[in-house]
Image (cartoon, rainbow, N blue to C red; front, side):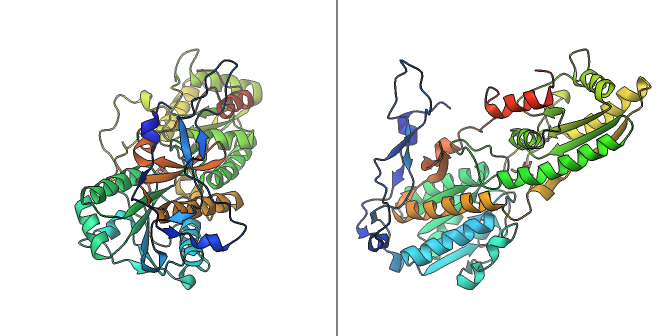
Length: 430
Ligand code: F6P
């Protein structure tokens, strides 16, 4: 990841004139702004250590910017679902209410739509009863939508509703939207904080080594792979093809395959593969069937887009280019290939689609989402803005939104994840 020290600087609304209410708690560990987490975790002998290439560590500050007695915060959840969204809503509320004593917390309904009164429903007041059991539920109790709203209307709305802090929970599209709102707030000279909590089952946000919901989605996907493997083993020339989410990065496909240890081919956006010819996927599949009689293929939805004549020219509301259906293409080409060669083959195609992301968070994602949410509150109360919580080298950090959305995180093919996939599948090194 190429980034300069200036691009890692966190914006602040001004001097922190209030003592944190946490000062009354003896065991609390305050974090000074000077405490930083290095971007480069590994050094070779002779390497220089770039201290300025580091991220501000997240956590409670001794002095805070907002007076909790007069502060109103709002939470918005946007984009696709991810296990842990309700945990984030609940933990943000609880931290604001019980740690800081903030009395008014609003829930914005259905994503950024809810910040535009012309089309959105009004916010709801979040209270203890509202959040009591939501952490056991999948989805988001606030609802979600894709796409930005006019930042001038949004900031008008924040001003009219006297909202001082906006927590934006979502993926890169959401964080980009949050950054635009923060810029409009700054342009008007208003003292409002915008803090993001990164969310995506795809795990493709820079400076977030693991996003909440990803591990739960992997677990669900791995169950599907187990079923698919059973199907493939039971049939004559059994081939199970599973398409999993993962638009720009193959973390879900690779992670689920590595967890299952049953996959024989893992196709991801980061690795373009040939379909035909002696080096191609179809020939390798034929060999696999000859040797072992069954095969499990895992394809990320963003894999193999180079096999289509042209990229699709349509985008979803978040600005993501819509994908061609790699599952459909592989299914058809596998059928044709084996039919033409008269090789007995039974294909089972499974697309679990949304099933892997609409479930409640597992224990790890409950913990991760809680940590991120509470740190987002500490950052916002300290007057930090235009930033997102990151997770780097097992530490929670502050990341300027513009750096978080400048690129997409992809799998590093020399890393343990992909190397582990290559070892466990034995698939060709395309
Ligand atoms: O961003 C996460 C994700 O689950 C992607 O893997 C997938 O392409 C996308 O969301 C689909 O979401 P939706 O159909 O809600 O736009």
